[in-house]
Image (cartoon, rainbow, N blue to C red; front, side, top):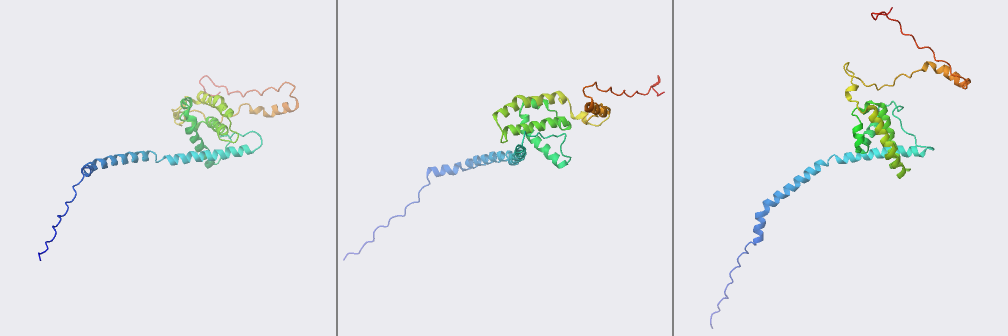
Length: 239
């Protein structure tokens, strides 16, 4: 009997050589990481630029909500919508500060989008009660035209064609050349008067009231003589 010979052993397979693509991937990894870092930096800068946007949107949304409520309340009344007045507004500082805050947001959002408004509004506009009065009613006219239940194309057209240009024209004519320096209290400054001036001719209130009540078809009573200024000597001293 012949001895059995063992079958030949199969040599172990050699480990697969790395694919060409794997080597290229390893070699290109630093470049890919650099590109990714660049994209992250761009996104970081864009996010930083938009960081204050939510607060700004919330501020404008709050303004629209408050003013829409004001307009809705006004429209719920019978008769025409009453216009707010700065000249006869509340004496509460917090209420007035809120009125001005809302007005400032509206000026930035709407009014100063128009080049003629930008040119005509002086930096000292807040120091002129008549200018604040003009801008306040113009803002509410815009809200009625665009945001109220009665909003219409006709109201918007009237705001653009008549109301806004008229306010811009009056502000420019009245205070267009004014500046903050004119409101300073230094002796060498030419100050711009902002307070209410005394009403002339009030000494005739009683006589005019009596005439209009009892004899309005007759000639009006003569005004009282003007007070005579004290005479002065030639050197300027009172006699």
